[in-house]
Length: 390
Ligand code: FAD
Image: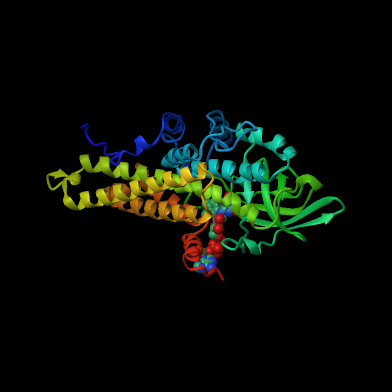
């Protein structure tokens, strides 16, 4: 028998096929070349420089709207899309957020609920990374309860006029198109808003202590006038945005484990070279207990992610199953980041190592796409039949 691989002790790779591995290698190589050497500096500076160039490169390697069919999208499987998210987030959650919002939120909304004209007009350029998209659901006063959103769209003749504010919107200031969810006489509807429309602005949110290598913005809609066909025709109500969130949450199931993998791998290698009391700290039982538990949780998480991915590929993935995955992956990743940090001692708090950056990023990942409490409530409702949201 061959030696066990400490990076894949359960043989997870054997569950993938050649195409899965090829997709993973492409994304991994791009991240190692274009992101990993620079991202600590971007993070410290609190910016994602050359984001448009990065988006075009991500488009060129097929990472944008990867799991969608047609309109220039790669048509990859859900498992391949998950593996891509994992590799991106192994570099930085900010990069994965850029790709998730583009593909799973903005492009998915257009692909699933848009008119043929919307799809033809936007999707090929979004898949190529020529146009960046954002997704405006959260408002300053309405986060976990988006059904209460206040942004309004009223009819004036055949036009729509939008007013309101969105908050914490990834890609907002660099987007060419925003999918904005607003209240109408007919319930919540989605609108396709070119960001050069008069009355639209997207001031960037600064002073973040997390996800610093990611653009996060407010969206201000001040009498934004749109033509009649700006509305997404195929959906009404909260079902529209929730269907998109389900896609993005699925990406996080994999992505958060990428951040965890980087932290664990950093701690494991560090423990083999750092010596105290005359021997490598990886030789102490207490360090090994930490490493063993982290490896166990990471690999359990990967197996759950793969299970969910395969269900998505067969069309049998249910929203509450995604909640199990999102809740588990982010929880596990935060714990792994924190424990890995302890293995590096003081070095653990330095940006010379990636752990503190991942740790801080994961706090955003914990909150967006449904807080842990929201996912517990989703699962709780399935288990008891009782709706405990309000
Ligand atoms: P709140 O809803 O105010 O929640 C605060 C706390 O109360 C949480 O712990 C929550 O779980 C708890 N809580 C609320 N209701 C209940 C309840 N019924 N029972 C128990 N506990 C409850 N949004 C977008 O639309 N588009 C984006 O691109 C986007 N990007 C983001 C990027 C970043 C970096 C961040 C941090 C957020 C982003 N968000 C985005 C917003 C994100 O989705 C919201 O922050 C999230 O939904 C939580 O809403 P909130 O922050 O208003 O918290």
